[in-house]
Picture 1 (cartoon, rainbow, N blue to C red):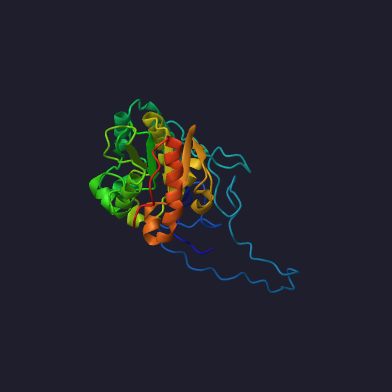
Picture 2: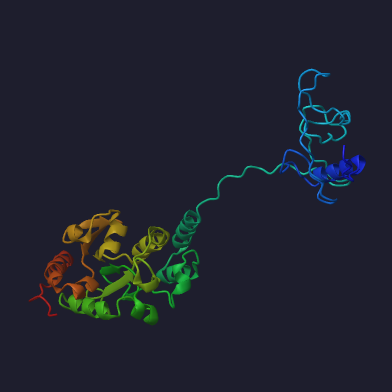
Length: 320
């Protein structure tokens, strides 16, 4: 047999060292020494029949395998029974390395943040405390892209609470909900039934907030995780403000608080209940800017709210 330059005892010591390091799998069937010269390829055995030896045979000039050697030519470490799998031995003075435990799949981070939001919202005992808890909540990625936390506007003692979707660019800059074009239209609509966010008398005042306190990038629709994460703050907001009537502006506010996927076109104009309070879903003012024909059904919804609150009847529908 051709001499490959390897030493049996040195190879055995190398193998034991690798086992101590935790190596338990070979990359090929036969051991390969990568520290010495590459062995020359062996010629295939001559299997030509020989009349003197009978049938074809393979040369048998290879030395006998050492006692305890395993199939494939690699000798088994000392103390290993035949057929047993060798186990890693820890170096002297170190405890044996335990097999890694099979851990449970990591919990959904969104679920963890939803629980954190419930705990933070539930601990708030006032609107100021809720605003502080919301500003300190870092579980929603929207906060990192927003300039301000848009909590609310108007009189917290108002009988009517208006709930929209999320801040836009103007709201994000001002830190107050409904201050852009849609907010100006909302103020005009509410004034037509005798209400104002600037009124000090709770009977004529309005309190305004959104489902989300942070502006989504490019004013995109909120994701289901974002809504689920921030809804506990919204329900706590309603409980602490204690309004008499809710006005839900747009699909997101209506579907979030009513727990339905029904479109706002079918929901609007019909009284519902949210947290034990009467709630009227209607179109968002931004939708009216895009489609002025929807102003007529919204005016009917506002008249229904005024009637429910016992407000004086408005003389006519507001202008554009």
